Amino acid sequence: MKRRSFFKKASTALVGLGLTTHSCTNTINRKVKQPLKVFTTIDQQEVSFYANVINESVKVVHIADTHLFKDDKRGIPYQEFSNRMAKAYNQTKHFKTGESTNPEEAFEQTLAFAKEVDADVITLIGDIFSFPSEAAIAWVLAKLKDTGIPYIYTAGNHDWHYEGMEGTMESLRDTWIEKRLLPLYQGNHPLMAAYDVKGIRFLAIDNSTYQINDDQLAFFTEQVESGVPLVLLVHIPMYAPGKKIGFGCGNPNWGAATDRNFELERRPKWPESGHTQTTLDFHKKVFSAPNLLGVFTGHIHRNSIEIIKGKPQIVADDNASGGYLYINFLPINDQDKRLVS
Image (cartoon, rainbow, N blue to C red):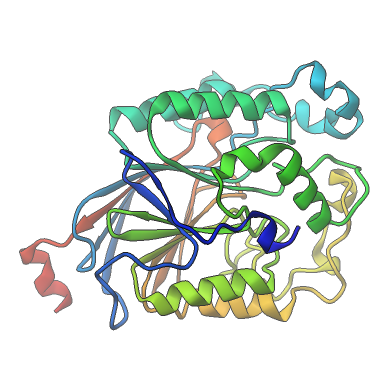
């Protein structure tokens, strides 16, 4: 799937919702001229960012790994490919209470919370679906529309994966984005898009194959050069020293030798050569970006925070068990400015 198949040069405003999408145009006036000085505080699932470049509050509800398995008769021809994942998350335990729940209930409760706090944007960062079910995708689109809140979506490795289907990970991702997931991107490029929310630019970059391609690296480089405050949204966490293979984007140990699940997931084995140089270059570029506020991700179904070269990466608990992040980007008050002056 070529970049030009999806990419629209013209910016599109979601009228009345405060969210503007961009290809490469820069409409944010405040540019970062030196590395950001940022305070980050975390209290369970609540995350607060304070920085001089933030002019007004931006409230984000961040969702990853809902693993919806809803299906109907349209999915019958694909059951040989969806059968295992259709049973994987039928019942879960709530991450806080330990009570029984399920992905649909957890997703609805999280959207209700987003409405309650009057979120500026909902970020859906992969594995919202356990496989690309038409019924589940239509259900999510309807639920999101009902909230009236802008949203950003990027795919995870399960969203487009029918287990055992022939093809490379890249070709299967392209196929099921085009056939099923495309409406979730709201006319934007599925593999890379920029969204401006009240002076902060959110970059949704698809690393659901664990790799980054040349166009994505060029796109991110362009956004860094714009100088505007950035937040990176990716499904698979960026590698941090000491982390296991699930932190697989830019992980020097990622590859065939460490791929333990390819038979279970019935997919191609990771390459013998490991990551491409482009993926490794992307990792370096991310954590060297002077205007990056932070990285938000999912995939591993467990909350964590890593500080990499001074940049925070925060991973959400799985939404299938009720997990989410409530992220606030806030201006620094005069009293606290003295701490970073």
